[in-house]
Length: 251
Ligand code: SF4
Ligand code: FES
Image: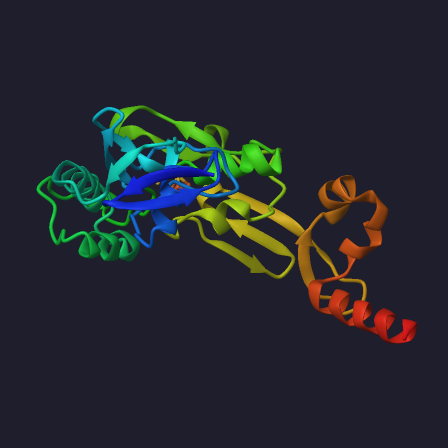
């Protein structure tokens, strides 16, 4: 275990813990948009900034900083509070309609941005460029179907050349992890639609109840877990019923 000081109180956490988690352990909630426990640290949104005062003095993104023995941290140092508020003002200016950002900003005492509003065609922007969708697709799913394009204010996420990517399996992990709801996924008939990526994926029907529910399970899940390949062919409801029937028969 590592013992550090957070806001003048000692906290012990396992070695390798990221500072953001240690701060949470101390009962303090920092704003954060780009961190996900299942993905590698990234440090894109700069919302989780804290001040380290020992062994040296520095403002750091707590989600990328592993704890160390004797570390002294102040989440309420004026510089840290100011850095978090500044990041929130930038995000409010980029995504003025985002409820997620507005609520985070309110908690940090920010109600308006000094940086103006985006042009009218961008006022519906919800993407904060946190990269979670790109990273989950590459790091966890292994598909790498989407990525960043453009530079500076033109930077955005999308499929290559804005065409449907052959690599997309329609798993919906990108929509699941997006912290601002910028990616909408809709299942309509036998189609899964991900408008953000100009993508339509054909869904397979459950052989038990006929409901369209999953994008080609044979191609992805069967490869991952071949020993239980038939398990994935039925929808979650039928799977549950099947499992309980098997369990009851075994009693
Ligand atoms: S679409 Fe969502 S997950 Fe992807 S970069 Fe934008 S905010 Fe992050
Ligand atoms: S949560 Fe730490 S930089 Fe985004």
